[in-house]
Image 1 (cartoon, rainbow, N blue to C red):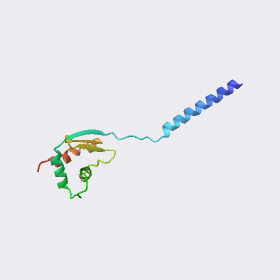
Image 2 (cartoon, one colour):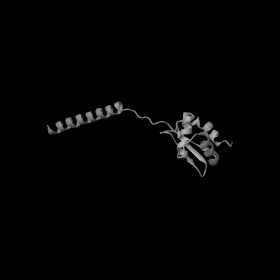
Image 3 (tube, rainbow, N blue to C red):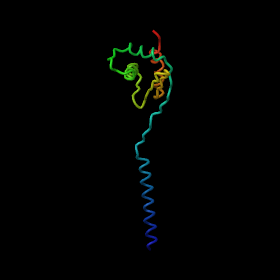
Image 4 (cartoon, helix red, strand yellow):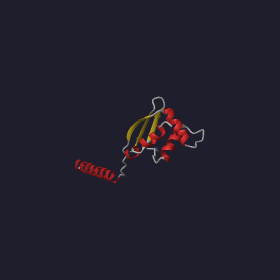
Length: 117
């Protein structure tokens, strides 16, 4: 009798665990991370920064990063998280990680800032 009671309790426990597992899998909110891609752009940093400063009526204490993010935003390119960008001043490489639809808008903006005037 003890053995059959233990088996019934164990089976009920397994059944409840499997039902609870199914409920948690099917009722849990699905979180899908956006698909981000990375692209690199080569530029002359001296020309790039000079054009960036000239293009904006900037406050002198703004960093180049703040100016660049604001410039992209004014051009309709949102580089706020989960998107990101990095610029290596020594190599002149701008790396942008963003959704594909955002990345298609970056080359014309970079060309504006990279053009010698």
